[in-house]
Length: 629
Ligand code: GLC
Image (cartoon, rainbow, N blue to C red; front, side, top):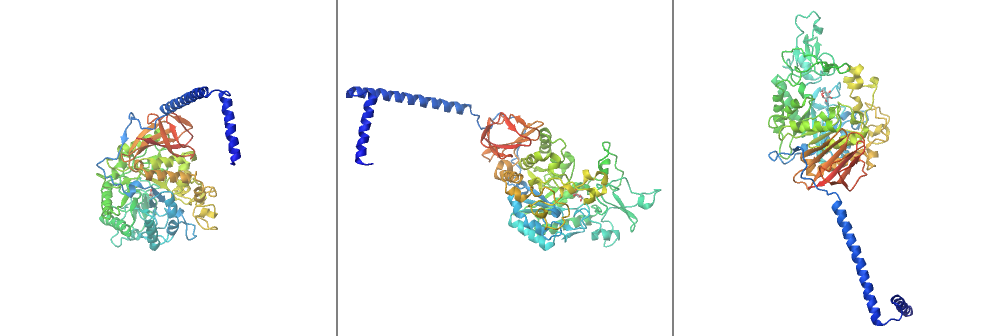
């Protein structure tokens, strides 16, 4: 600014002052007017400030408070102080089931393999999985796709060899991923040398399997004179005639899966040897297959008919299996296996055992053992098999498990596996995010079947293309019992065969037709995808003690809504999980707190602090709120 223009500015200022103060008044009058004007200004400022303060007070006092109410009623479950507070990997991590034929093919034969799994470990890290349960990879004629083992000490050439196995285990170790093997004790393949020897009564193996003479006084030819009426799980008699021994052998599953005889101590020892071999290699534990089928009533009485049997159900369901399942001394054997496993456990490398049994609640709880001396937990299939998947149904299922589990019995949940339809088929696509949320956010260990993180679909497979023996043995009801639809190749990307195997190769089961849009690569690129939802859930559960420890309280169960609270004394906050398993609805959860901060939203759209008196929920929507203590 120049000097001239500065002087001009001062003169203009004086002119303005004169105009405002009423022209050429005396200095005193001007001072009085100035004071009066200042008073007005202060008065207006005071009023404005007062109004603002009132507005702020009113806003804050009427805004719902985010604080857990002390009046919250309902039964709480907590991890007792007398149980071990140092949680192990099998308690905090997610178990991810890999069906090896279908995960990743590395050698272009259309079947997945161990080297393939190695290539995909980063995916497991991305979704926050710490444990792999691998369905059987032992040498097998594959009549039941590995659940018919011909050599427990070898890897089937389809999957690789022992060197590949060691390499895979090492690669997993480097990424801090645990490996749980599938152990199939109930039966072997009929091509197992043990069975061949038993048929030939050689090498002391005469009694290694369950042999029985044809029924006495039968008018039928010997090979039709079945010892009793027992029906195998996959249909047909549980007995198969062997001409060499002129005897029947028992098979609870396929006739190519003869049952071992665990009343023979040599068989028990052989099972210890198998377990020890793999534990020595460094595996972290076992999923023990078809456990309830291991013993049968030695008197071989007929089983009674099931009065509730309905046509269209598998023939196995027509009998009540009191003579062939959960038969003593089953639990003693489980305890003995556990002792073998425990011998390999150290504080640096604790080992783990989980048992597979579809049983009523009281029966299943026995597998925890007395004082935890059987399995670390038996698989909990009740969410998987639940018919009434409503808020009330799910709540009751959770309550059942929590209330029946023994003290220090660690809870767990399974929502999919290779023997059951995919979540999308059972619950509908709209609810897959909710099912994954329930699985990952309930107290205890979740198990996820491969592909559920991207919501893989049930793939209808025509009988002419069916591979599963359960389907092939039951052509009339193959759509209900067939297990191929949930075993199709993992969808990695939009390239030919979904990146599962090379282009031009025919995968062992067809790739789902939606693979170009539904695949891991596409979902990784979309932060609002099912994959990212799964990852966020995994991340949440591994970041807070409220989810690691089993503190749990059911909050609301209606036809639509299932809501629960998670907490732990060491955590700064509580978490309220709200799921809608029904239709569009609104729910009042103000009994918990007046407001909550949204930390996860299944639509990825909702954020901020919201009042809990009227939470609007879309079909299948999930919200997780952080609640102050
Ligand atoms: C278990 C397996 C199933 C198999 C059966 C016989 O139930 O999960 O796939 O067919 O045992 O081994």
